Length: 476
Image 1 (cartoon, rainbow, N blue to C red):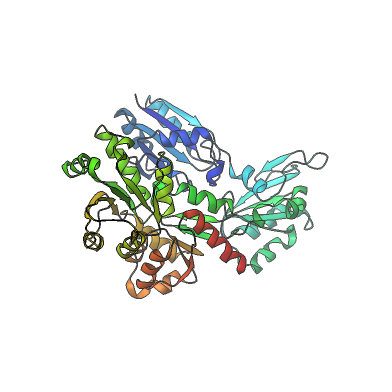
Image 2 (image 1 turned 120 degrees about the vertical axis):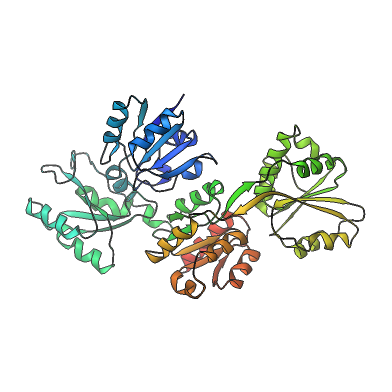
């Protein structure tokens, strides 16, 4: 039976979405995004979900009648400062069952994130949203270019120039920024910082407490715009750590993982596991898909009992450990020469070696290990593709605001990123953005493709990359 849900995702900060909103995204076949709801929660969608901008209620009706589970995402709350009620009326007239999932609105969330109490016992007991008279605290949305007009209107309504006030830029986002000043001086102070864009204007006694209570502004990556190019299904822990340190995160995956079919070649490799002495997992994706294939063929982790395990990268090792398997060897990033060197102390003569990894061009590993007497089988278990929309999204981003830091977690993410831009324009388009890489092999790929690498993680995990970015920011 089909299900349609109109879901408020909150103000944009992924941590402020409700449990119901997350469940609606995880269970959807079809996801349609209204303007302003962003992409912060889309990594939670099923891998095969149809995700696109919202077009019309008629489209939602067609999906529902076809038996699909549809989730429509709205910024904030679907029934507050949004078009959710109009869409709900159309669904009701079409006799389509639907549910509405409320979300936190930005007027309530953003001031609290910037340390501004909206009510204070004995000083402020009422809140007004918009141009409301008589409220002790006012929260007013102002579009770009209308800041001074909004301030002038409030003073014309009786607010004095000395009223404590704040402008909040990127309200409700992890990288929101607060500027506080008396109301009469606020526009001039914001202009001295070169600030622009949509904002919330907050007036009231709580503004005077914000310098002490604004914990967001004290985080090391506060105000820094960080681009994540990692695959959508792997982005969550990485994004969460960056957000916790105050970064404004932009997600444009330049890699998409597509599992290979569980065909005769895969079944043949599995049939030979009982005589395979060493399995080298080239990535966490290879682990995930390899074990999915094992289950599809009626096997499980016990099939690896005769084999020693090698993990390339700490995240790959962690993926194995999550399945109760501890690798005998953990190396850094994948190169044939580096891996062969890591295995120097191993007796390879007569050893059968299996390497589940991405479908990529042949490398020197089989011949290097064969020279030591090993029999090596490379088993492609997935393709690493570039998402179709990545190029246009990157061009729009860097032709507009750009970012402060670009992160790369693998060589594939770098290659696909660079291909999105004209060769002769790449340095100019990126401007002052710093390039941060998860390890030296990825950094070498970036340099060979013309990028200047500023940050390289010492620990080859996303946690290590976040720490390296934070350390670099503190030194500025």
